[in-house]
Length: 580
Ligand code: NAD
Picture 1 (tube, rainbow, N blue to C red):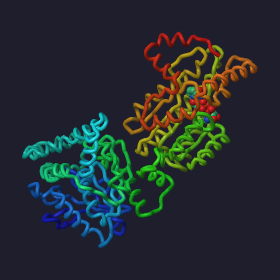
Picture 2: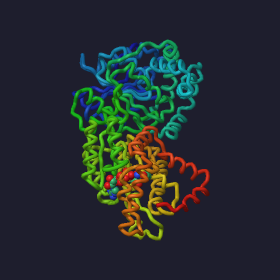
Picture 3: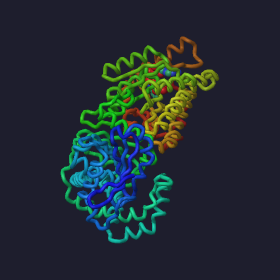
Picture 4: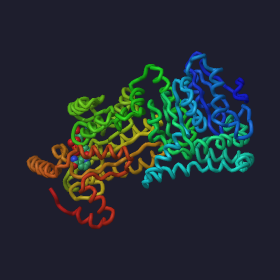
């Protein structure tokens, strides 16, 4: 630690890591000190020259009283003094900032951009941008816009409270211990030996000046704040103080912008230090023109904001049963939206053809042969995907087979076959890839292809319907389990879709001749219904985009879903119909 003379105050500055490396300046928020960065410093110091400092009013720095000491002008002069000391003349630094640290860092990258090579901001927007954002919502007061503005208004309750004289200071003096407990219970941020700092009560009381000196003035008279510095905004979607929607329209002010949503709360550098360190390092490597792995390049493409950016740009999507029908259409739909795709099927030739078609759409595509019912093979497959392409962002467990006939005509072997592919295939895919997504900590989405048969009982599909009902329930359970990790789960329930399934479906209890006749009849009926697999694929993409739980596709599936809920008795009568 050493002291730097700021604008009339002494600032406690801390240095770590490799002095020859790129300088990363970490700016803390309110009511923190530099110790909020402890975990991040540990993870960055091997590669970078890491500098933190206590901003005026906090920790080991001077604590002047009165709002006049906490204006943006003073804060900028302090930051410039720190930069003059820690960075070689003319050398730009990489700025990383949280909460109020980010608010003042936005001011810095907009007013002295020549000093910064990159900026990573989280949970602290530019106040001018917030003012413009709020005005734009109120100018077009649709219910949606009003709701967004109100949501941020409610999250900002403490800003208004801080405008009252004396009371906030008093509360800090008596309630600092309680704040530490709330931090643990509500945000999942436990206290350590150094965090929150011992000076918390005094820091909290002094830092109120930041809000009084700047907030209302800036929100009332916002300026035109733009920056050419490459910016990465990490967006914690569970932030109790800053709405994730505030990044809407940010590109207008920041042309070189990347957005990184994360399912986390306000103190994300303490709850998810590995992910944040990875993203900070990646952003810096990118702007420095350093070497990136394929996975890293893809992740950056995904994060980059641009008018021509497609919805799944840079995502890695794995689809099973991708050699035909719904699986193939899903691969192509994701490919069209910019995803890198892995097409897996029991039939390698058809999987390769799907990958080839995806490449024609401009996507990077890979084909794998996989039997989804084979536990060991699925483990190998998941390992290979991770090793060669990285952790998938979306997995579509779609492979499935059809089987029809009365219950007494199904042999135990028939049951095993259907359950092995239709249910165990989904269990394997979900288990193996969900584990990878959880470990990575950046969320993801799992889609399981169930069927309308999952909720429409029928005397002719006992094994198939049972397998699909199990897939639907599995998806619901998984959805509940993985929600806290930011991983969505959707069950897709198509009705009659014109694919190859009728050609391969087994009609048990029938002679070969009768089987072939039944297949032909089914093929004709499916062709007549004429609902293409690409329409199911479009619903799968929408389910991922909107994180939908259960998606009945086709009118008969939607009707079936409705009747099963409002009149199960009618559904039981329909189940007795002998079709086929
Ligand atoms: P499809 O027969 O056209 O495609 C299924 C693909 O899965 C084929 O390429 C096949 O080779 C592959 N496959 C089969 N067993 C496999 C295994 N063990 N491992 C890996 N791949 C395997 O059928 P589709 O209609 O596209 O079916 C896709 C999914 O949609 C299935 O789960 C099916 O049950 C479901 N579904 C289809 C309909 C429909 O009407 N077509 C309706 C509801 C649900």
